[in-house]
Each structure stands twice: as C-alpha cells, then as structure tokens.
Image (spheres, rainbow, N blue to C red):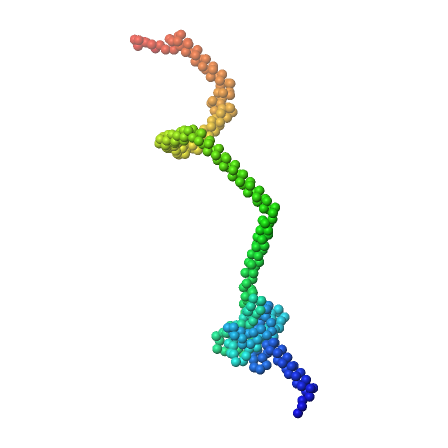
Length: 313
C-alpha cells in the first residue's frame, strides 16, 4: 500500500505539533509523562526567578516552577510542580536562592521534620536567601573603588612620565644637591668655630659646674629658708586676722559714734566743747578757787586757828 504525500505531510505536521506542545509544556514546568503535585509559596520579591526554574532538594531537581502570579498586595504567588513520588513534609521551607553569578534563582526545599506530608495545592512556608550575586556585591563595590584608585595611580604615573615633569624633577634634585652642599659648608664653618672657641666653651662649662656645686652645697640653707617661710605662712594662716579686723572696725565705729555725740553736744564732754556757759562757769570756779587759795595763804588765821594750851578755838 502506497502512502500519499499528503498523508505523510499531515502525519509530520501532527508529530511536529505534538513535539511543540510537549516542549512548550516542559518549558513551562509541566511533565506530561508523569503525575505531579502542585504546591504554592508567596514571596515579596522574585527577582531572578522565572517559569521552568528547577525545584531542588540538596541540589537534586524534584520539580519545576510552573506559574507566577502577581497579587494585589504586590507579593508574588509562585506555583511549582513536584513529582508525586517525593513526599514533602508540611513544615518544609521553600527558599528562593541564587544559583549562579548572573543572579538566576531557583526554589530550594529545606525539608522539615513533620510526620505529616503536604498535599496537592498546599501552600508552603517561604523564605528568600541572597544569592552569589548579592554576596559578591560588597566585593564588587570594593573592586570598583580599587579600579578607580588604580586609574588615579596610572594618571599620576603618566604625569610623571611627562617630559616637563621630568625636567622639574631634575631641577628639584639639583636644588636638593645645592642645599646639601650649602649645609656641608655651614657644618665645616661651625666645626672651625667650635675648634677656635673650645677653650672658652670649656671655661664656661667649668663655671657652670662650679655654680651647680655651689647650689648643691647651699641646698641645706635653701631648705631651712623655705622651712622658715613655710612656718611664717602657717602662722599667718593660723592668726585670726578676720576677727582682729572685725574688732578694729567695731572700735572705729564706736569712736565715730562718740565723736558724733560730742559734735551734737551730748554728754559732759560734748557740753564742755559745745556749751560756752559751762566753760565760763568752770573758768569762774577755777578763778574763785585760785583767789581762795591766795587768801588762805595770806590770812591763814581767818580760816584755821591753833591752840597750844587748850584755849578757845
């Protein structure tokens, strides 16, 4: 029986479509020839994850990511299919981990220890772990800084290799050489001066040594003098200078009060100094007393009589 070309073309087309459908399903994570369980997990960020990425347990693939849906709250609901022959404990943790330096990620199951197993369409616990690319970000930043510094160093080297810069360097070295020669000449001059004045320097040092010896011998006297000064300062500190000053101020205040009373004519001394009548009375009394004494001396018999034989007084 001869098969027509149309039949061959139709059969080839069907086979091609079948292969295309199976390949597309496989790329979407669907295994047509085996039964699978569907599991879900929710992630805040699925950067680097795509449909058909593998689901791994200790690096061994047990399934693939089959679908990803963005929820209204901004989180991503991820669906992955796992072959039914693998039992997944209910407390298994579905980690989103990086798998290469390019930032690609996969689902890594960290199997739990629960005796109950997850069923079809269950939602597993989720976690996000930084991949190799995130780990290398600090190293990348440091490398960029080092590259920038290396660029600056190369720029400096290029400047050094510049002929103008080399001329300036040569001039600088010449200036340094001239300065060193001048310093050498100055040191020679100083050496000659020291040789000429060595005798005077020795005398000066001898005088300084003698002075230090005298100071050393006078140390006892200086110590005694300082002790006397300390004693005097202690005596002055112990003296009740404040009380003495307070007493002096009180005496001055009392004297001022007495002088004020005398000026106001209070008391005998005030009346004597301010009242002329009292002064005149005292003056008159003194004059009369003086006259009485003169009269007594002149006529003692008028005032005193003596009788030797007991006569009339």
